[in-house]
Length: 319
Image (cartoon, rainbow, N blue to C red):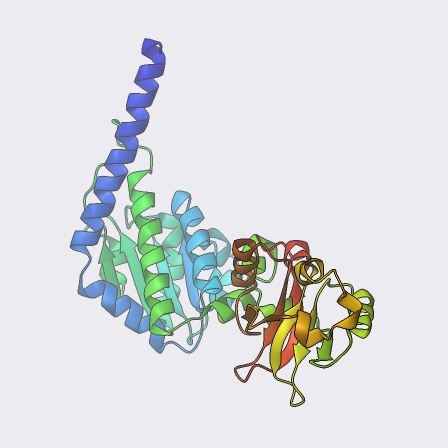
């Protein structure tokens, strides 16, 4: 490793350590103003309107997205655009969350003044005590005086990291207070890998599960397996309760005289099943663990409501 490479590595480690130390400071100094901010947002009947300029603006956009995806309606408003008509997006039912490390960003003047004129609740986040933003805010959150990661102290790094973490903390506090569930989360994340991992078995299962009675001759059971195309058939009692399952393995084990047997004589009793409300990722894990390709979907009283094949999970991106 060359000296130059070593220097780069040392710088990288120094930056990460400084930002980690800043986050520790933030956690330790977080106080009543944080609780007030969360309570204020919980009371609002409108949205959280988040704003910031420059690097704070980029952080504001991310906080907006996190809030919106975890059950808190939120919208980003660019402070410069706000001065040219976008203030109309901010209503008296909303609460403003305004970010500025200095607390003196000139472009924020109009949006702050608008909040004061129309009595719109304002949460200010800044790193300078006594700054205009914090003086005007209904709830003022002061970031601790952690140095920026660069030695010159001019590049917003540590300050933006703290602001981002603070936004995450607010979003999660709101989310947990509202008991925001994975089901609700999936509503806002229907696409992509995350959406796939939150699919339920009922979303992917086939309703027409192949079923036969316990006394069904294996000649008929084989036809049912072939027609359904899942490679299995469930065996139920006269009331529709699941007794067992006939799989490829069962067929091989009873190859001699197979056609002279009934489904009840060939089946594996008490097979692995899955509930329709279970996550599809749980079903996939169970199939992988047991080295099987199908699961019958059953209710609490062991009635079969469907069948799930491993290919259904893979096609949906569940992995």
